[in-house]
Length: 370
Ligand SMILES: Cc1cc2nc3c(=O)[nH]c(=O)nc-3n(C[C@H](O)[C@H](O)[C@H](O)COP(=O)(O)OP(=O)(O)OC[C@H]3O[C@@H](n4cnc5c(N)ncnc54)[C@H](O)[C@@H]3O)c2cc1C
Image (cartoon, rainbow, N blue to C red):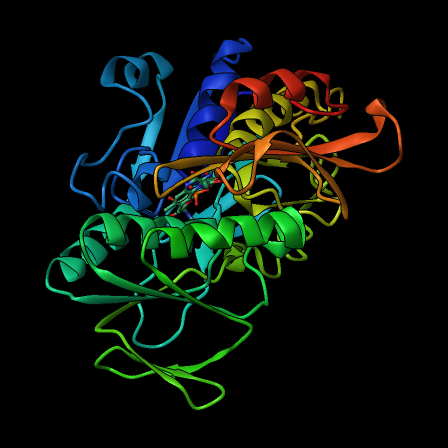
């Protein structure tokens, strides 16, 4: 391969560029990103960035970037795949490449008159808005919504979180552990309203709930998930269905095109987590250079989230059979396992609050875990 183009200049794109060089690719490497920034880390945006403790956190320093010897086409959007080897760009130019890595991530779902938090620019707007706000409304009690709520409480704001499901995070952690996470809000003075949809949000920030109740927020942020950034692939050669459809090694229906990170739909599943994006890059680029799937992803979908001074960690999959192995939910310090059978080896997932040491030990024994 002489030229590889990476579309998306964030975590998965950068890690793919690094992995390609580590694996000996010495051809032309072009990285196309529609943000104007070099790759920066998103997890701090909902945490220390909102608290004013950090500014943009780069994912690589200048020396590492120089060593990559890549062409960075920032502030430039890929607008289409004209063929399996030609990419159209928003500046009217095209790039020919023998190999393509799709790393375009996700686009936040939104509601009128609310903030979202995906990019550095979003974070700057939200931080500025919070500075002048008394009462933050958060729609969605998933990881990002909960982290924003936690940061706003730390800033002394009144916080109300509205969640459509009866329990937060049920789809990821199951109802029991989702409820445990939901309790963190009340512990720290945030109000959590569950099991109700939001009808609309007024320009002044008032949230109108479906049952007629109103939440008197003055700034509102929606943390209601993302959709994969695949619009630019419409009508092209790559199969798209709730993400770029890939095999277990990140290879698309076109052999010289792989996909990595939040944009991927692998076996019907989108793993929208930091560690998955990093690990997928290693595997998918190996397959790209090999011209076939010689390696598959082994990451078990690890995710961490920092809320109200508590670190939540999860890997694997949740089942109804969840057992606290150490500590207690009441203390907000425990490790629990999810089982799909009666034996030790039937553990299929692990969740922890503020017990990283035991979580890490159990994680090593988990089947399929990365
Ligand atoms: C606020 C926040 C906090 C988070 N906290 C955690 C955490 O605590 N723990 C955890 O495990 N995960 C966390 N995550 C998730 C993690 O950051 C993501 O999984 C990771 O960023 C995915 O990387 P990616 O490169 O696949 O996608 P992205 O980071 O979304 O990057 C995709 C890039 O592609 C660009 N792009 C899109 N379309 C085009 C196009 N057509 N042409 C050119 N460029 C394009 C986008 O602008 C973007 O820069 C957090 C995410 C956010 C937003």
